[in-house]
Length: 190
Image (tube, rainbow, N blue to C red; front, side, top):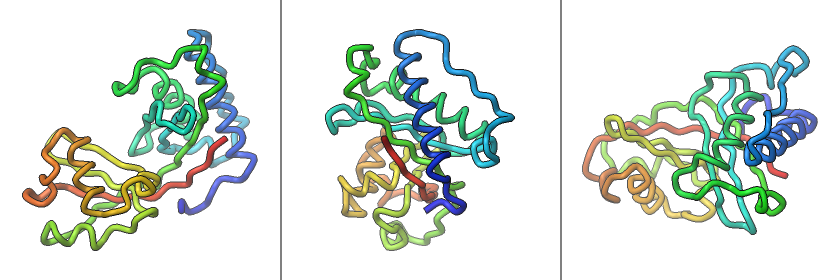
């Protein structure tokens, strides 16, 4: 869990902002304004988020940032639109789909390096359901949010699938020293 969790009001603000941004972005309309001065310190502070869109329970788009570079509110607005329009795995969300789209927001902690000596040690250091994982191999990188553990509960399979998401062979994590980082999230949804 992210230290200093958001209040219910802050969560509602971000979900409403994500919904408005999604609706306007998909329709090509002007995005909602964010008056930074009126936001709480947590919403105004730099924050990293992922916005996940589902349609009838199926993934429809998921895009985010691993490290903070703008206010949390601006980050959520940007990634709500990107999840709908720029996730290369899916065609852009169409206006007719908007009523069936559900929004989930994940607020990330700062990733920290996972120290390990041997590849077989990596799964032993991971906490299923708690840790998000980033694998880096040169310029390639991929992440799975902690929620992915619900679908891939086995740590070895989790790492293999993450290698494939990165564009590498599933056994890359076993055969090559990769940079591994972990983070946690505060997750909430509509």
